[in-house]
Image 1: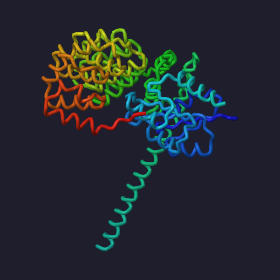
Image 2 (image 1 turned 60 degrees about the vertical axis):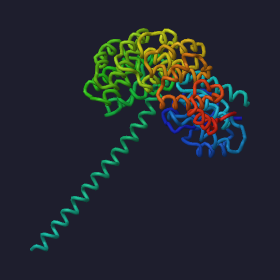
Image 3 (image 1 turned 90 degrees about the vertical axis):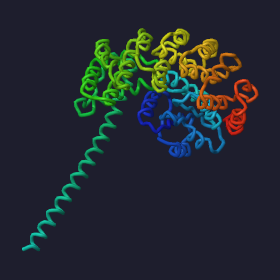
Image 4 (image 1 turned 90 degrees about the horizontal axis):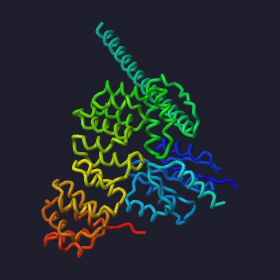
Length: 123
Length: 313
């Protein structure tokens, strides 16, 4: 079965950069700019991993995580990469159903390994 | 006769308005098309940069570099990749910068620009792996009367020659703002600078102590508590002593020392209230703070604790 990864970010540059960094993974990579687009992709595709890239310093993906986890289902795995690293922000995101949190600047090889690990465990 | 003149005048005015509107619409369409073209070109540049980072020795050929705005787009692409990542091999990026003379070009643009425009070009230079010659040529901007220009010149020195970063920060004549400390800490997170807080907190220069406090707070260095307590008790700068107090709070360490209570007692009302808000955020109990608070502040702190909503898992 083909695996699917979704990258959600309003920042076109970051989205493209991460998409390119993950291009060698054995998975189809979908991209969208917002949570509503992500929910639409999630409706028609069986996703294995969603990567939320928080672009702005004060927008950390919390709203998107809340939309994607609104049904209470903790699938697929949700990884947020954002600029904030305040403990409260991270706790708030985990509360909203985020599975893993990474901060920018991010090591692209580590991100690759993390996403590869997530989609491998879902085979 | 007058009627004819009136008709001719009206027709000419209408034609002029139509021409102006058409010109404006054409200009807007042209600008939009140019922005779209540049966005597409930016994606191609990003793809070529990422390919270069995959380890190809040759320098990629970036298309349409002679177009207006294309060279700046390439510089922004490289600096954008570097700003959002760490642990990349700088070799390919250095080769690209050298092959296309991006540092020389940005330096020339910075020379011609003024104020924040100059600072923006220097900020791009600070992100790129530039040649030592470029660093030397930007040293004169360290003495600029424009704060942002001088700071970006310092950042170029820090990122290009991290081994001299402490000396450069110590010699910087202005006190760092919180935003400037955050910019320096971003380089720490990228691994450009070492996370060595001890020499910074002990340094005689206030800017170095400021950066040291930033490191302690950013990376929650609990081992730094004795240094923080000493700073709170002995620091001559009121602002830095308050910073050290806030750092202690962010580490959630006890605030029952004599040095702490003396410092809090000497603080102005606004500073004390800011500290209390910080303590409430870090979940200090009102009972534990009794020695620090006077009778009028106790109800204020209790109201802060009662109203604070904490996101708990």
